[in-house]
Image (tube, rainbow, N blue to C red; front, top):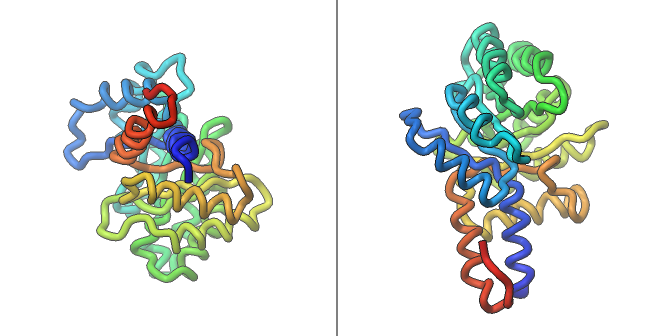
Length: 254
C-alpha cells in the first residue's frame, strides 16, 4: 500500500467511526471534547450513555454527525418495558441511532422469543431515518453457528445493523464473528449494516475489517450507511497515520 493509499484508507475509516464514550463511571467531563473531535474529524456518529444524548444533539446540531446511544446495556437482561422507556426518552432527546443489546443470555438458554421480542419492541419505536443497531455480544456467544443464528434473529426482527460487542466483556470483536455476521447480511432481502466494536484500536485492525466487508459485500460497500466502527481509541491511530505520512505524500494533514 502506497503512502497516498494509506492516507486515503485512514480517512475512509475515520468517516466510519461511532466515536464512543461509554466509560463505566458515566462521567460527563469528556462529552464536550468527544463532540468537538467528532465535528472536527467528521466521524459518522458519537455513541454515549443515554443521559448525554441531549447534550450531544445540541453540540452537533448543524453537522452530519449522528448521535447514538445504548439501551439494555451492557447486560442484555433488562425488562422490555424498562428498555422501551429508555428508548422513548433517548429519541425525545434527539438520538439518531439506538444500539440495543440482544438478550444474549436468554438466547443461549433457548429463549428466542424473549430475544426477538426485545428487538421487535425497540424496532417499533425507531423509525427511519433513525437506525436500530443490535449488539449480539459475539464474545459470549462463542461458536460461529450461534453468532449466525443471533444475527439472523436480529435481522428478522428488524435490525438495521448488527453489532459485535458491548466492549464490556473480555472478548470483543473478532474477524471470525464479523465474517459470520456478514454472511447473514449478504443473504438479507434489504440493506443491513455491520458494526464491529470492542477492542479495535489500530489502523491495521480497521483495515482488516473494512477489507473483509468489501470482500464479502463488494468493493466500496463499507460506507457510513452500512458499516460503523464502535471505538474510542481508533481515531487517534488513524490520525497518526495521516499525520505521519502527510509530508511524504505532499498533502495537508488534519
